[in-house]
Length: 356
Ligand SMILES: [Fe+2]
Image 1 (spheres, rainbow, N blue to C red):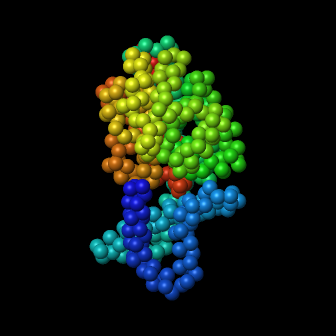
Image 2 (image 1 turned 180 degrees about the vertical axis):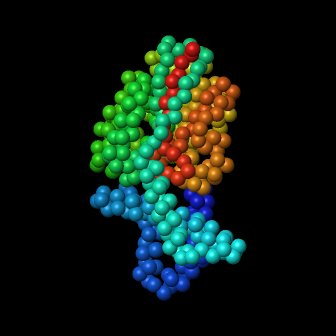
Image 3 (image 1 turned 90 degrees about the vertical axis):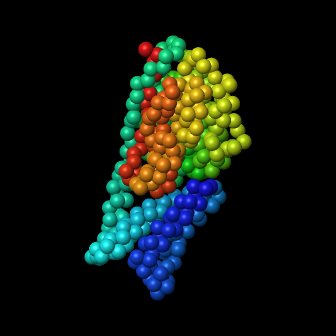
């Protein structure tokens, strides 16, 4: 909630910069149609959010989601560019046709980000764990799919095909599989696509904060219908002795954290801890987990927000070894809201784990 409020304040500040630089207040007062369109666009995301679980035709919610998230991306960059022009103005550098220059630059950036968001990369690592393991395993780990109005069936099929193409022994999903409601996923029969995720040792997942936005019970049912084993404070043992421990999301203060689940861990055998939000990495490493996998940060999703996530998290995207624990934070195979990736990338992890 704190992040949401801070983001709202930053967003309002940026918008105010754009309004004052281009004297929007004057235009808004003089042109009522412009003022109405501007207000409607600015309110469209909160309206979508409050309507998302209501029994409204899905094409209407799809339209509202598409317009509102595109608007967030537009006004964010338009405001940043206006801020930059305002700064140049102080230095007495005049930009000719500033409004149109800012508009064109914003559209160009968004087109670039939209194209970049259509693809994802694979980050592959070979890990050696010096603990008994009957045979090596290949793990595919994805986080932040954010399935919902922002993901077409084709996009979800493409992600599933890419994960299956790695021929993993097990698939792990590190939270935020669902974006903000399950209704649209049921209507589009998305669980049928997820059932096609192919791994002989199984598909395991933990909840992210967005499963709580979608509804805890509804999300659990969706996971079950998709043949995904939900690990909420539980440990699953793979055939080769590798333990997969899953924590409930950090936002659910009622459930256990790493100290409790570590009591169930066999420290002589190798283990992976799945935890959506990358907090307390050092503590989890001290507890004896060999690998940690998280997501949640999206690596800021768009520049310059990636600079902020770098300040907020010990690892906002990438790899770090803490004690003997291999810690991974993924920027996510997809993203939340505005469909743009700028200065960051979509990705999923492939881990080849052996003890030799
Ligand atoms: Fe996420």
